[in-house]
Length: 113
Image 1 (cartoon, helix red, strand yellow):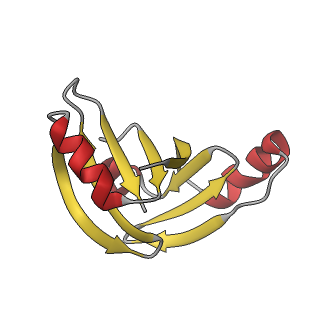
Image 2 (tube, helix red, strand yellow; image 1 turned 90 degrees about the vertical axis):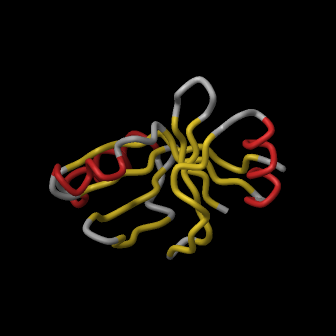
Image 3 (tube, helix red, strand yellow; image 1 turned 30 degrees about the vertical axis):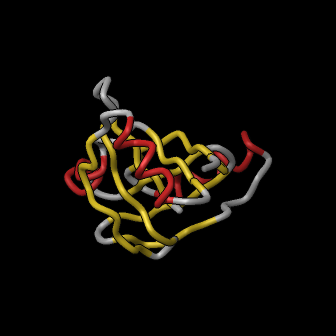
């Protein structure tokens, strides 16, 4: 099981207003941009920007990072062996399969394959 990329989450009211500064700071353009339920997402550099109304963003605020892995099934076994709790079961989304897990120390992470 390999971690391919880790994104720091940024919260924004407006994705179009957030991206120009991040593009300048990172020297990159968005690698991904899509609507997901009631929010918009964009991956740029090492950031995942989650934009939309505060009450909608709050639905995703329990996770401190988004981590892209090569094998979600293998990750699940590792998480369970480490006493992590799967808080959102494996689900398919527009970018692939994902799950949320709370580690034994209380931190929560979104994992995406």
